[in-house]
Length: 461
Image 1 (spheres, rainbow, N blue to C red):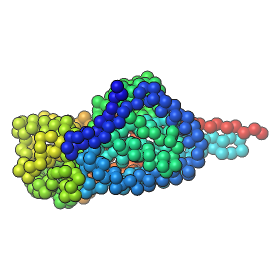
Image 2 (image 1 turned 180 degrees about the horizontal axis):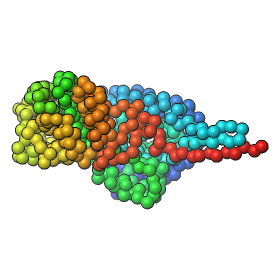
Image 3 (image 1 turned 45 degrees about the horizontal axis):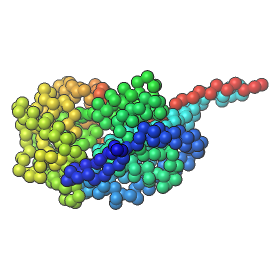
Image 4 (image 1 turned 30 degrees about the vertical axis):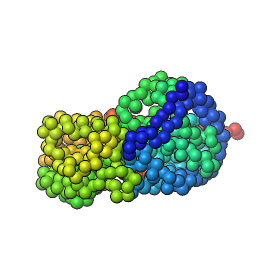
């Protein structure tokens, strides 16, 4: 019997989509098609590759009316927030704009005696293993620059967003990208590991759990395959005494709760200077108390279900443990009768939390945030660094020099000042510690998708 992947809708627990996984032989055949197609694709002028990638993104945008309810069914995001076309277009468009400069040869000498330069050539076939929380935007981070650089792409999407890879590949092929160059594949974990261990890819990009990242590294061990990993996060916010308090509360709480807290760089812990602590907490409670938890297909819903019951169960476990250990829950349960003990989970704000509690240390990836009072920058820095993860940190102050000085001491990939939870395609997207390794987007994003080749040409005569 052929194994299948099933997307269970968080709306009602029904099977929303089901697809058979590729057999081992069929998976290797897909890789072979990609390798063959890539040889021709890299010979296509870059300007034409850029045009086709832009056309693929545009074709995807034409599917928005279908994509929005589809995402609600698959992972629970309310339809009122639309799809992800704006961010997808922004990221792909930026990488297309900078490609001619980022990929141009580095000329060292061009004289009557020598031509010396460094060119960048595609790594071959790129495997993109994409997550479900922002399924289009996270995938496009690698898909667009990989194709522009002349690689072929195999996209393996998360089971929770089973139809996204299928839709993306269809859009790009309909726009003119050759079918072998961009393929969606349905793979189980074992087959994925087998392909990686067999040196099928020039680069593997994975966004997901720390455990998943370890599995990718294990599979790639000894193959010398390039690997990019964006894994867990526990991103902090720090509100200083000169912060715009209302803006800080609005942005940090939105960063903690949007998409039911299921954001890679979502805010999971907040540190507030003592003089503003009570006011900040009051504003935060007011904001969260105004949310409406419900069916994501309802236009009035502002907070949908979590993508899977097991994700909600983890958040409940962390929250309950913290309360038993002395944390104070501030959101009234009676405001969210839709919390059914399953995927529909009420938001929660906790005070009197400590770093002995899992809710302040483990990734929650749900609508809960702990808020702590701090007395100094030194204490805030120490607490922000007291984490196994490092993706972003959000600093709230009127002083950019102070933010930069503090930022240099924080172990993280991106420092925000007076904003949070945003991925700027002009800046390198990276992390440290158990958040992973590698660089996506910006001109640095092309480095892992290409290999340098040096030309040392001595001219005759």
